[in-house]
Length: 322
Ligand code: FES
Image (cartoon, rainbow, N blue to C red):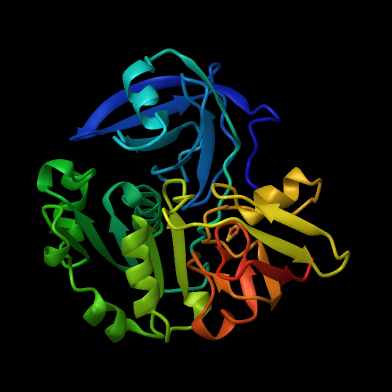
C-alpha cells in the first residue's frame, strides 16, 4: 500500500530550499534532532503534507546512501491542484512537515547490469536517485535520455553535463513542440532484451515508450507517474461494475475510479501507485470492454485484465473477478 498520511508520518524539518531550474525548486528535509531517517532505495517516493493541506507524492532524488536527509525537486505546476505552488510559494527553511516513510514502486532491478533511463521534465527526479546510486556503487552501465523544453528548464543540468557522464547522458530540448520530440525508437530497438528500461515523465511520453516496448519482456520495462493521473476526460461516462463473487453492482461516476468506488462501498482493495504503473491492482476482467489507461498491461492481456486504479469501461457494465 502507498504510505498514508492519514496515519501520521514523521515530522521533519525543511533545511534547505534551492532554485535549480526555471520553475523548479529543490527541498531538503532532515530529522529535527539530526537522527538518521528511514532508509530508502533508488526510485522511492515520500508523501508530505504541503502548506495548503494537500498531501502530495514526491520522488526522492538524492543518493540512497545518504541516511540523514531526503531531497525532492518540485516543479511549479500551473494546471495542478495547487500542491506544488503551495510548497514553492509558502514553505520556508526551518518549517516542519509531516512526511511519510519512503515507498518504492519503481525499483532498480538488483541483478541487471544495463539500464536505459528515459525522463521527461520533472520525471528526472527518481532517475537522478538511480543515477547517483549507480555512480556511487560503480560497475553498471546506463544511458539517460532526458527530454525537457529548454536548457533553462532542465533540472540537474550542471551535474548531468559533467565529463564523467559524457556518452552516457543525452539531453534533448523540444521547445514544447511535439514535432521536435526525441526519436526514441532506435534506442528502444537496439537495446531490446539487453537492458532494463525505466521511464518517468508526462503521460504522453510514457504511452509512447509503452507502445515502443510492446515487444520487450514486460518485466524489463518500468514506469513511474510523477503526477496524479488525469481522472476525467471530456467524453468519460458513468458505468457499472459487477463483482463476480458476490453479484454486487457498483456505480462508477465520472471523476471516480473503480478503485475509489469500491472502497466507498467498504471493499478493501490493495493498491500502491494508483496511477496505472505498478500492477498491484491488476484484476481479471470477465465481461464487458475496458477503456485501458494503464502502462502495465501488454496488448494480449487487455481483453482479460484491467487495472482498476485508472482504467474505465467502454461498455455500460463490466464484470470483474472480485
Ligand atoms: S495501483 Fe498501481 S497499477 Fe493500480
